[in-house]
Image (cartoon, rainbow, N blue to C red; front, side, top):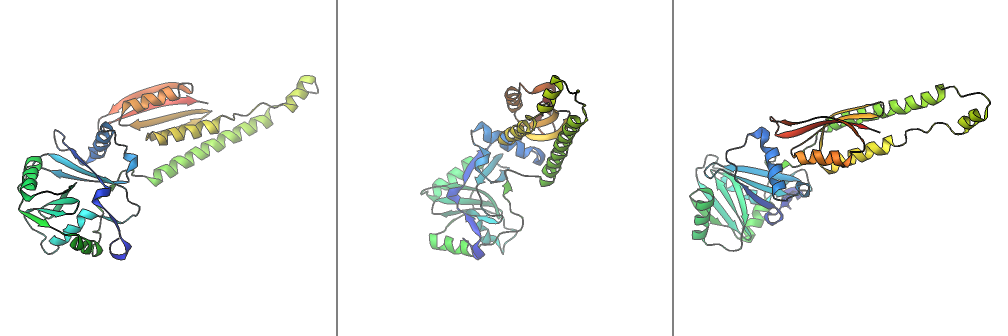
Length: 296
């Protein structure tokens, strides 16, 4: 822990990736690109809570760091070396801080990447950075363990954590969808109740008596069916873009970056799907959208 009990995530508790796209990815599309790259490497992004990304223009590399943080405010251990630039905001150099278990690379006072290491000589480090990132090291600083611990104790979080959530949420959107779902469900239940009371039963005939004792069954599969649907959507990281529930039919629009996920949804609910309206690729979001109607 740092000052005031600040949670510090150790370098060895993070995971590092290097991505090499053919060109720099626009900010609007980067998150989708990242998820696609994680999936292609069989990395489940659900295992991590946050990610950090930096772009090295010299080598056209994206450096990605994945980690799990238990607190809203936390500090990544390699960031403690930023204190060396506190009084030099406009420094122009490529610096490497080497300590027990890892090294951190800074360019012009900005953190670029961290790598886990055992022991490495200065010459080996310079050669690696030159070949991997097309950068010439200006300075190499060796930081012993006591010095590192002192830096961690004095560490403060900069405003605006540079780590971003891997599972961004929109509480207002889900609040609206949940309320629409509840209103639709309540309307169906009230409508069914009204039908049972409004339908006149036959007179005192054997058939009439049987109808009184055995009223028409309610649609008891609706609520469990929707619960199963929402659980599947959540488990498979599908996004709900539209939702309508009417007369026991659910018209829903789903979105995902992998078309196979939408086709798997169709196979899973094939007995409930009344119609598949469309499956299309949304170029602006680099995702696939599918609109279907399910019948209960």
